Length: 175
Image (cartoon, rainbow, N blue to C red; front, side, top):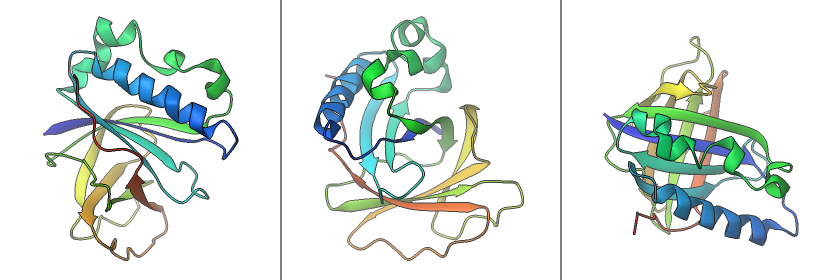
């Protein structure tokens, strides 16, 4: 099983978006300096979504987020207060699944299906299930599908959230 730390949020389309992106670039650099963080990539989807921004961190194992190296310099309190005040719908889910990488190429896409309750329909064929193993646990299960070209049409269902993301930057790895 591969472990991913997935952070999603809404950030308003304001004049300081470039400053926010610059802050987040530095934030990722700091996180990648923590032992156990193996890669990071940011994504965005339709701005009308509840949480159109997503950061995905590939972790060595779930214990990385309990290490002193992480807890002493990262987490919700590590976000610049100027930006933190504008962020909403900020959820963090620790997930595991049989997916080697969640890297999305420049011309690629990632479709996420979030099962919101145990009564939600099961994930469709072609989606890799990601089980929620910690943190906010705001969903029951997440499904992911990654590719390039045109993303597939994914039928919406009650108790599902479906979002199609594109990458903000290429995957980053520790220096």
